[in-house]
Image 1 (cartoon, rainbow over the protein chains, first blue to last red):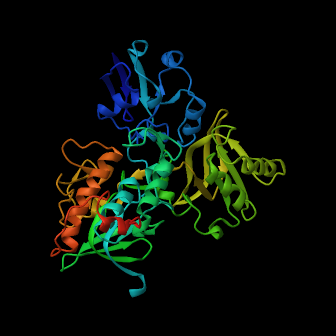
Image 2: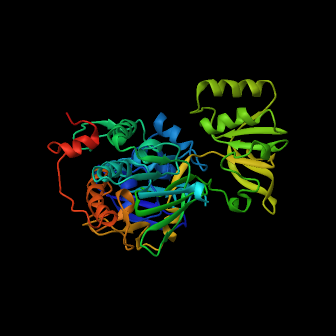
Image 3: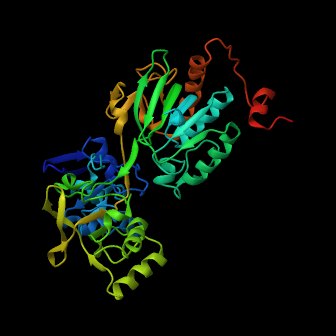
Length: 110
Length: 343
């Protein structure tokens, strides 16, 4: 199964995903610009993505805890999700999403 | 200078779980440790990122939270009385003619040490920079990520962004001295302590501060001096007069000065050998998430193993002429005495 990820520079990448993997893990393992610093623990928000509007219903809404974590990024949109909270499955084959600027590796001060 | 000069066997940079356990292994070998950490408490990522999250892969603990693990490690190393220097960052490491090291911190201290152990995880925790074009030009002039001097905000038009305790606390603390204060958050729900949220809402009702839903869109000003913060709101662009901006989006890890210490790196991690976990500079070791070697797994348990082997090598540097006998804590009365448990 595949996901189609647009990075912060606007380049589109088609990534092979595996059933049960977190979308964050797929993006990270393919070496795209995603910090994902807590490793999937829902303890940071550095795997922030925007889900393509056509896929919002399939992916579903964030949990309350995920909403809380999204408070720690400055570029939230109505289609914001943390990619560590989306599990790969057949239903998500072809999923399209865009990496948020706040997920980039160089967002710290000084 | 001498008042701020600390002489020790080992300086451990980073008081996360691996660094803390290193103090245990070093302590068994009679090596004295000083810790330097940018956070205000021990635990590293366990304390800052996931104090309440359960960890399932610590040997012997089917489940333990980040905070419990930290507390247990602190109890385990207490017999060795390691010293902690929090809220500071090591800025430079210089090798001395005699092979020892001179470390300087941003708190103006100097450490003279025979061994350096870098246990800095993902680097130092630094404020998250909001994704806003050109914000760097305003930083430390009119955009601040912490309040060092309240007076910098006196009679200013202040915009605070965020929904956590830092944003709410500083809203309450700065309100009495600012010319105007606007709290900006993306939603009308806050993670901060409910009492602070209630107080903030009272200030809004009393007309003392403004609360605005939205996110920072862009900044307007010149030569680093802000004059307006433009918010992206549901109703479109909203310009708020602002001479000071305080974004509070939490912390994120950054390699920081480690990159400038002349160590061989591999993609923001420090290359070590797997016998001693020593870096490309003899006498400087790296353990835990910050190191790299073939097969490296970023697991706390790997860091514990690395700490034990590192300690053996560190001992040889500090006491080259001493013959070290490998002993077990279960059977060695000598070790048990050090731990304060000998019958």
